[in-house]
Image (cartoon, rainbow, N blue to C red):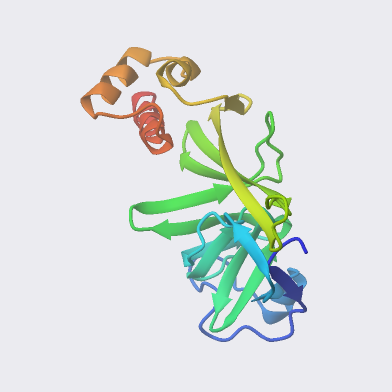
Length: 232
């Protein structure tokens, strides 16, 4: 068994509280939702110990989805299954998973702001089908790709309980204008500043004055946002 989650056929019509947006894009019809290969998911009950998680965050948070056809959902409880590349949403007691190939982008709303996930970028260890969190957007983009690896039966010798483990990792990417997307092998002051084509002294001063850490992806994102104000 690969996971505690198993898939059953999508057999119900979405209730009104998971409605589509009236003002942010064309309305989705029930027939179109069925065509998006949405599947209902339940929690499996068995004697498997799970370490880690396939999700970016286990808890559901509000968010919205924009599909490849340009249509958009309303705000609803969602979470990102990084391992499967699917977006799950909750409708009462039911959980549904939408395949990433039907999704253009999606947003997750947190207390400190909105995180937008997009795909279509191509670089080292990054496929155009992979979603990345765009932490800084504009002429200069800073992106984080979350990845999850899966291993089964990783318990010790003689351990009776079947064990499965999900381990997460992050990789970082930058894109300036029409240039290719490039990977930052790791964060750090020297590598981050070297990625910028100009204004490096201004960026270093900004980081020092605002106590930014070059090892924090969110602080590095603030550097990219500041850089975009310098080149307007």
